[in-house]
Length: 429
Image (cartoon, rainbow, N blue to C red):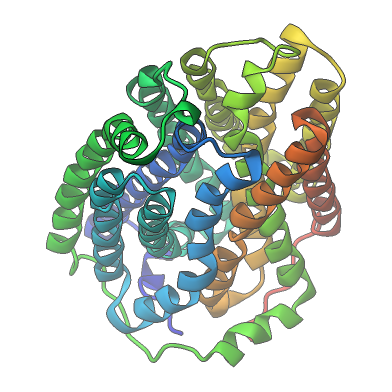
């Protein structure tokens, strides 16, 4: 498909520069919002796990419902971008996110776990649409030589959202965890109890829905600021032809493993820190420490956007993945202070992985970069699969032993960094 807004990449001076800066701020705001809302799953999971007395594999169905949307919606969303453009598609995504937030109201009234999964799936669908827009757009708004650092800088604001939202969510959602044991209730009493206890989740998401409607309105009013060329949506065969490019297909696989590993670790923070062999923390206190995991990613991305201008992005990626593996091994084989903080420190080294894998995978694809973004967003389904496998492993072997699953994910990423350490040749096919 034609890439809308390509003319902005070499804009020089005057009104064009102002438009570029405005659009960058718009995209950064999108990264902030969808990052923050995604990370709220880390708070919702322990809440629902307690209320519905779920095991780890069942609790990870929250992430499965959210991230399966990337598998089902990414390619159709890229087709929508081709037909109606980036700004209108972004507005559509924001309204879909709003609908997902509002579905928490009937989910709470029903007191049924499956109803929450439906709401989370719709919310994830909206975020998928927004992400399909955001990644290629920020890549286009600047010089090709700085795409790695620019995307990493934008992702830093994604991490700002993932740092702020879970901390506030821990206070609002986990702080209200009742001491009543749901296993002692049955029938109407249990349904009423769950409905009352999930009202804190509902109020949180209603607030988010209000903010999303306002942002969608602003995006719609600015829909004509970006000159865009429309085209027919590429066929599935056209998309899949990209997988014949080794560098791209390996990179897409790494996105699958990266998102899966990052989400698995983030989803288990609360329960991991509550273990007596780690900190034995309470649920709200453990939830407040999520800020260090995602905050580390934020700091790492701001620093990483500078490092990627100096060192080979592939080598930087390989080193970060190797350190993440070391931290997992330390956490799994120690106790107390060291075990907890080495686990949280993984976030710092996750920092540059997604944007660096994304830009390395798409390097050299020329006008097909937007199509590549659709496939890469499909690969984010790793956030559905890997956490469930990790949860299942935790049920069978314990949380510490289950960390072998994300460790293997990082090993694959380390290999890609070494593989892609040299720049790719430009190709338009």
